[in-house]
Amino acid sequence: MATTSTLFNNDEVTFNVKNNKGVITLNRPKSLNALNLPMINEMYPVLKKWSQENLDMVIIEGAGTKAFCAGGDVVAVTSAPQEIRGTEKQTEFFKKEYQLNHLIGTLSIPYVALIDGITMGGGVGLSVHGKYRVATEHTLFAMPETGIGLFPDVGGSFFMPKLKGGLGMYLALTGYRLKGADCVHAGIATHICQQQEIENLKNDLLNLENNEENNITAVLNKYDSEFPKEQFTLENLLPNIDECFMKGSLEEILKCLDSTDNSWSIKTRKQFNSFSPTSVKITFEQLSRGKQLSTLKECLQMEYRLACRCCEDIDFYEGIRALLIDKDKNPQWQPSSIAEVTESIVERYFSQLPSSRELEL
Image (cartoon, rainbow, N blue to C red; front, side, top):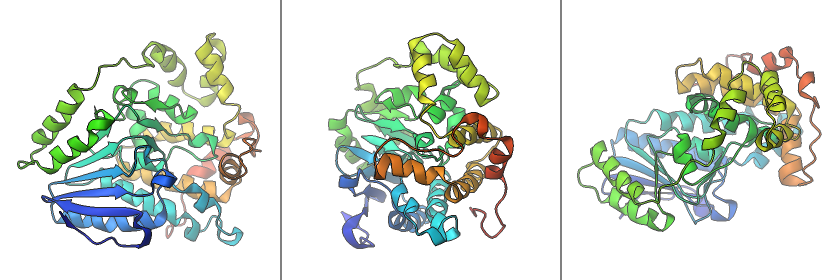
């Protein structure tokens, strides 16, 4: 196997080429392959180079069996010194991450993401914009950002409104976790494969001699057809999800949940008590605006403004503290209620940055 050199210490991400096909391996299994800035800085130029060299295919995978990529290293972002909070130096992670997401979404060669295991946040951004996303029975998808004072970024405003009915808004606001075959039913994954067969699937792709896309699809379909057929576990709840999460405002969604008297609505409504009020308000607006935007580029540029504003305010830091640092699970959100998150607060999040700081793609 011909390989490129590993481009920085600790081998946090590796690049290999076989039969004119590139393989990217996220190699931080002890950290659930969480994505950090050095990894992004290595991946972007290699992926760009492979595209320019017109490789037949790119495959991206995560090391180990627990996670494809559990998300971005948000602890590192929120641990920035007070004096650079909200500055471009701090938000560089988001800028570079979104540029990588855009490259993946506009890649001229087939891109296959093997999303085996935990796939959340930044891991979704590395996979969902590619043409092929292969789940396994161990895949666990979620965009849980409203619980940490952030919002479902990495292009969430582009792909989530495209999911059926109110499903995208439901997943975005609640961080609901999809497992295994549910990822295919929801439209997050394009195919599914048994975990014990994922290495064989990868080798079959690497050994393809005719790399026309119908041959790639044939390999993926073969493994997909061998996976036991399972019903969408949310199937019976889709009418409730559509009824409540296709409303014209967050307040109408909450009112619908209050008036829908079943165990699902009671549990879902209760969840909102733990989310950042600001996050749920801007997330609703983010998906509503994203539905009207036509390109991934426009969505990522909007999301970068939101990310910068989150870095200027309190909730992002408080959410990370409560969930990942002190782990007391008792965030003190500011404002503390949805009613206190005014229209002017929301509009500030979406307002343009100084021209020198806007995301260039």
